[in-house]
Image (cartoon, rainbow, N blue to C red):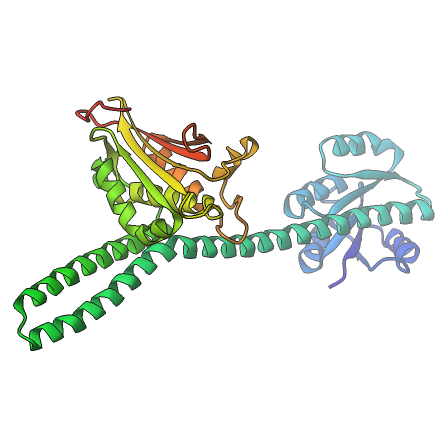
Length: 383
């Protein structure tokens, strides 16, 4: 539907002249009262309204006040006699009209003003449409990024579940052979192996459930889910989840000082440790496995519990040390989505702590330091 120009005047002759002047250049509608003009505006897309000031029942300014409220994008022009210029200027100052034309107007002046007003309307409409398309594009792009990030977060626990289930099937077959041979000792060992593998698979399933829950709701946990957590236990759980990747990447240097405890979610804290370990594994990818070292250090000074993951990789450039925690920012194109560190810092903040990065003085690469309020009673043996 094309955009219309609406002329409003209570005198039929003035409307005929306006239509004759502008009809060849614009699609023109006419109305002889304010009420009729509002009906036209509701029925058609009107980009410009040109209204006479002196009309019975509803003056031009009164009509354009209503148009401003109901059709704010419509460009409003007022035609007025010399004696009503004060009202026109007041209407301009109050934003009810854009311009006013004095009677008698010149045809070329009228066409020029209408053309300019219509151009403004169409430009604004194009900008609104562009903005709408950009918003849609951003939503689709963001959805794709989030979906990729979710896949990235789910990859490790799903791989852990798959590996342990495959191991369980193999052990089950061996158990069958042991039972046929009536080898009770071997059978008992296979049962133990099966139990450990299924327990590990169960932990992976819990991790998947936690990620899904975070997607559906929020990563903010109510106080009822908070518990006192031993950081060493969290570290051991995380190490089991990435054991295979760590073994292939290089050597792990685990340093534990005391028994730091914090209050929070065990699963969320292990998510942070897993994210930091995966990040370190990626950082040493180009270092020969025999030379690659990843250090994991935990301790407390009584007030703060500290967990550090350091590597011998290239480190994080100083200019990227804050940006690296931004969602979707990554220094590893094609490897990660940049969500892991953003999620980890958010969890740390929700637990009243902080997650920072700097260069490690021992290994020379990056060191990510998680600091959390220590739970009262934690051992004070921070090295």
